[in-house]
Length: 254
Ligand code: 5GP
Image 1: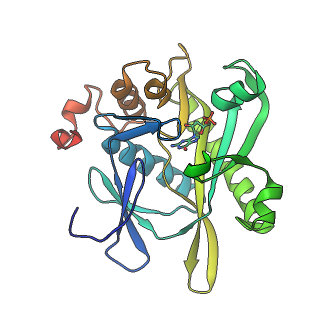
Image 2: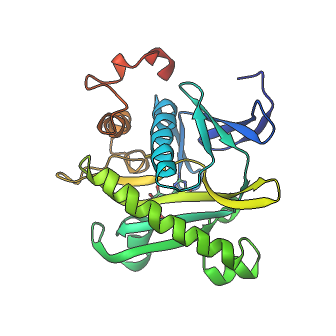
């Protein structure tokens, strides 16, 4: 991990220069933060699981024609991705009321929304990632109208696909956050799905019990955090039935 030049260290990932120009290595850490960095901790094995979960979801999305930054998984904690210019927005999709939507608007957590909602937050830790509108986004040049159209189009397809995928394994996709980047390929610039999709960035509820299977277990001190991430991986077919002990190289999860 020290061989390569570190480009950036975020809360849950470290980015290194990739082996080829235009590539980046994404390293997934076990570190967990919440409430704009006010709560910090470690979820043992999270980096390994999120690397695998994000690989699977990005690969499946790629198969239905969603352009993504993902190239390939390199090892337990690293994946090779295309270098993109991150569009400084968190794109949040909500299918069921939860989290800040419920807090802000007083809508009871668990209420199914009449239609899916897309929200945007500016990626700015110092400001606490404030919610912004399309007016702000185009006024301040964070994305063009054309890019936003593309983002909405891709986001709705991603939501439809992921809702179905999770439903197939008994999980409700309550909400999630995704990020997009500009991929410069010669004279061509394309908006592509970037960052990660994992239980760190999604709310996932068991369809039968409504049990939370995501980072809310850490945020809200619900316990069994590691188990929840493992269960998502197991249902996705990434973990063997008998648990992470059977995973090749599972010691590396520590
Ligand atoms: P909320 O706005 O209710 O806190 O979050 C909505 C959804 O977006 C949740 O699934 C949450 O996990 C995700 N989300 C919102 N902000 C962030 C963030 O800064 N990082 C990550 N990983 N996910 C986020």
